[in-house]
Image (cartoon, rainbow, N blue to C red; front, top):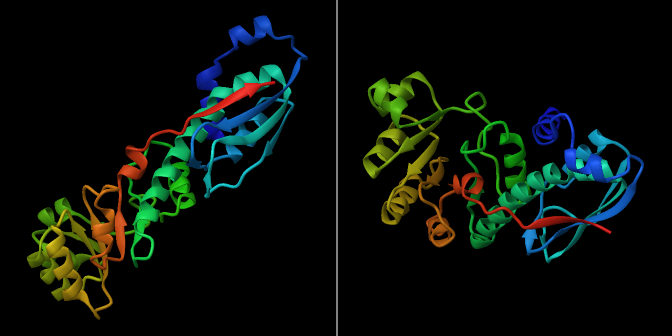
Length: 261
């Protein structure tokens, strides 16, 4: 996997100065990777891929991704000690961050359980890590919005401004369109919009937008300053989706460690 190779090159460079001056070349070890806090894990296969790049190391994944786990052993590894130590930081960096995303996503998904709404991610991802981070969102119970600019139309404020308004832009292309108030909601509906992004709208207006679109086969998505404290209230309005950029830019990495026995 090119991304893993780049990460290993970044960390190891030409030589692991410490291990190669301390650890005999043929030395083997057994080790465990464990999570030290409750979490929803993702990215565990990266351990196999990473150690597979480095040498004779076997990897056994002990747990399932996508479910709440208590602090426990999650992976067992056995093989060349130098290879294990070369891959340790790269493996932990990936799994800690991806598990942070999946855990944070699950917290949002749990908050809105029972509503019709789903949690969506955004393009607010770490450059070059988008596929992995969106994978972590899906493992955590969220849904992927769009991978990039190429796979879905999303007409935002700047597009509308340059095109000369909602009516003009929707005459050029149909797709999801950002609206900021009820006046814009009504104009978008009148011009055959089928997917509205309700950007930072007050809850009272969101409820009215739901009423306005009832029975019209229009998708409603809410976006803007969504938190664990307000996501349930947003979901209760009846919107279909809630976009949460924080899933991939404001998560907390999970505390995971590797220990040789």
